[in-house]
Amino acid sequence: MDLISIRDLDRKTVERLLDSADAIANGKKKPDMGGKILATLFFEPSTRTKLSFQSAALRSHMGYLDFDPETSSLRKGESFADTVRTVEGYADVLAIRHPKEGAARLAADFASKPVINCGDGANQHPTQTLIDLFTIRRCKGRISGLNVTLLGDLKHARTMRSLVCGLAMFGANVTLVSPEGLEMDQAYVDEVKGRFDFKVTARNEPDYRNADVLYVCRIQQERFADPYEAKKITEKFMVKKEAIEAAREDLVILHPLPKVNEIEAAIDGMKQAKYFDQAHYGIPVREAILEYALG
Image 1 (cartoon, one colour):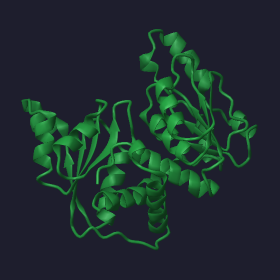
Image 2 (cartoon, helix red, strand yellow):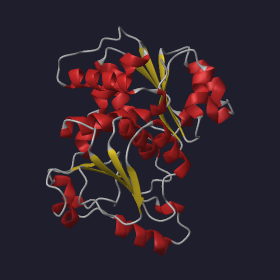
Image 3 (cartoon, rainbow, N blue to C red):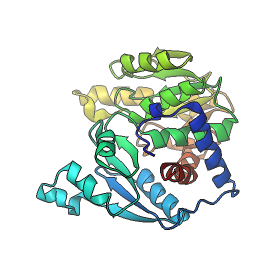
Image 4 (cartoon, one colour):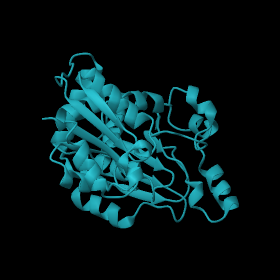
């Protein structure tokens, strides 16, 4: 079973995956994939996604093959299609990250084995969304009706695109906060609104005083023509300790990581900061995903 986009899943399937991950995290379930093999084909750098998938495989009694594009036949000119067709013969499931939008779905067209999208350009990152929903549910006990603020560069962040769909599926109230020019694509927001009945608002000024969950991603300074403007916007949207102290006491702060300078370091030690827990939840969630993909 492929997992290419969160849009391919219905709420019942997502809930089943989250429940499975809960059972794994609580020690009530231990998946056993009977020695099957995961291939991690990452054409972009990764720490959390790749390592947590490999850890999840080992904990589920699987082996893994770690593909390195720098030492592969890609250096000799081999095509993406031929790489996928070759590697699928060595593994039972493929986890793929690629800089081009649509690459994971293209790989699924080539492959007869299940393909899991681990991020394709600025498009989708469904396994991260499942981790995000899992973390919110673990921290808050529910997703429906929560006020969730997504803060940062929403134009280029695949994590945020996937998450909006997941939050809408569960009826959360979503506030999109980004610098002018870095708003989430309106056509995509309208598409999600057309599928789900949820409340979404957008603004260009950082404000999360009424948020139950604050999800932060970085301002991608490399996309600005003017370095001074990039620095000014980054400082304006930085989440600072004094702002968190003025927010709700039970606020949950999430981040897909790696974080650079978008969250003040002093926040790391605050009870509201849950982003390292979020990263660690990648293991039980991805164990559940591997079980789902292998049927």
